[in-house]
Image (tube, rainbow, N blue to C red; front, top):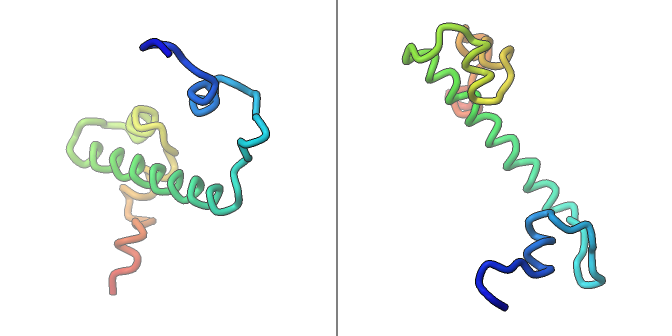
Length: 93
């Protein structure tokens, strides 16, 4: 195969192909759990980044920070006001 060409495996991996061969299986429950867990971690990181940006003075409005970091405006607002905490802060005794 020449450089720059996409084969069937690459197309499937990138989501460009809807064709699932007999050897290719759908996600099992363990992979689904890991995907959901990683999505939650990513979501929390984006909220934390938005809150940090507001505290540094990069944004004046919660909505602007939330839109920039692609997270919930309500979550950012609650975190800045101290109504909610990160998991790490909540687990400190």
